[in-house]
Picture 1 (cartoon, helix red, strand yellow):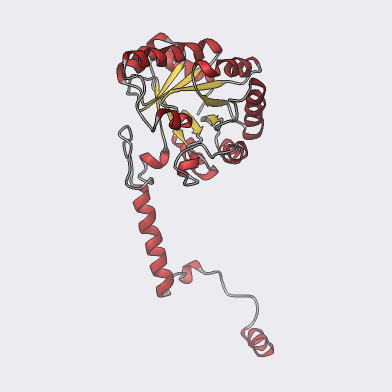
Picture 2: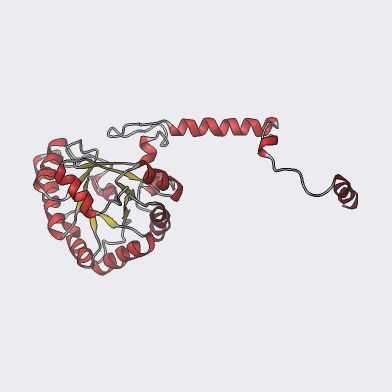
Length: 282
C-alpha cells in the first residue's frame, strides 16, 4: 500500500475520489486504522472530550497533544497523520504558532498540523507554510470557539454567515492551507466551498459534497454513551461489545473459572519436595 501524502490526496480530489479520515489518539488503535486503509488520521484535540472527559476541547495542552500525537505517528505506515494545535497554542502570536507547529512536526512524526479559524489565523498559516509545515485549516463550527458561538451550533445558515464562512475558506487557501475541515456547515455551502477552492475539503456534518469525511471514532463505534450527534452514523457497537467482554471476564474471575489450565504456564522446574521444603521454611 502506498503512503498517503499531500500529492496523492490532491490527486484523489482531482479524480473525484473520496478521502477517508478518522480521529485517533493512541498507538494500538492507530495501527488498526492504518491497516484498515483509511487515507488520513487526525489526532484531534477532541481527545479532551473522548479521552480525558472534559466538556469541551479548551483544557487540552500542547504537551498532551505531543504525547497522543507521537503515539499515533509511530503506528501509521500508510495513513497521512494530522495533529491538532490546541487552544492558545497559536492564537497569541505568529512566532508562537510556528514554534508549536514545529514541535508537532518534529516530535510526533506528523505530516501536517491543523488549526481552527479563518481570516484571523491567515498570518499563522502563511508563516507555517513558508517554513515547510503543511497546514489543514478548520472553519465553520470551530469547537475552540464554543463559548463565542454559545454552544455547538451549525454555522453558515444565514446569508451573512454563509458569506463569512466562504470568505474564511478563500482566505485560508490564499494563506497556504492545502486542506480544510468544514464542520457543521449546510450542504449547499459545503458544495460551493468545495467547488470554489483547490483545497481538499473534509466534512464533519457538512454533507457528502465535500472531498472527504472525518468522524470521531468513539462516536462511529458506539463508544460515546447515549448522545450521538446528528451527523454521526454508528458503524459498529464496539462499546457494548467491550462492556459485555468485561462482564464475562469479571464473572469468570469471581467464579474461579479464569485462568484455566490452558491459560497457565507449565509446571516449575522445582520439585514438589523442594516446594514443600520452602513451604515449611517460610
